[in-house]
Amino acid sequence: MDVQNFVNELVMMWVLIDPIGTVPVFLMVTASMREEHRKMIATRAVLVAGGILIAFLFGGHFLLRALGIPLPSFQIAGGIVLFLFALTMIFGPSKAEQEKEEATGTIEQARSIAVFPLAIPSIASPGAMLGVVLLNDTEKLELVGVAMDVVVIVLVLGATLIFMYSAKQILRVIGDSGANVLSRIMGLILAAVAVDSVLTAVAQFFKIAGVEPGGLM
Image (cartoon, rainbow, N blue to C red; front, top):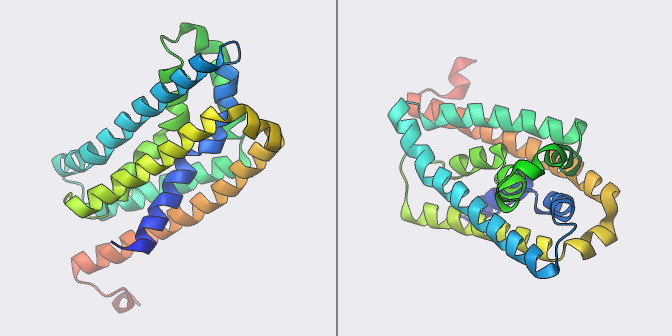
């Protein structure tokens, strides 16, 4: 197991899922509920989000093969999208502010707040769905690599569940301003991860094509 690769994947998924940024959203949509109901909703939201992300982890590669898209091309496109997503985290409204506004007008129409807005789009965001497809950087699913990717997802979702269980205490300590600052910092980290993904994919493309990058100079 490549420890550095594991750490990089863990950081990327932590930033994309943003467990701390989920706390204000969770508190808002469960404000009038009892503590046992909050825990039940948090558990269900994490399970639903986990099922969605693991489905993308396995199904994303089959979709790429069906479309005939090589993995480096998807990694480059995905890295660009993640970079743009990171810019919105840095310069746009924080995750909590944005999803609070989205939840305010639609929460009464939702069948279950555990599914919307918690599981989707707060935990299993479009960025997180894209991220899990990028976790496995090989053309085929390998047992060790997939097991490591699943561990990464489980660890981040486990942390998300713990944060939701302790939501009141966490928000009391960091406040809305603290959550906002953390969102900007995570956006900066994600931008760096996205650039690294693009550079790695470009190097893989040259390797597959049998062209040395220095030969183009």
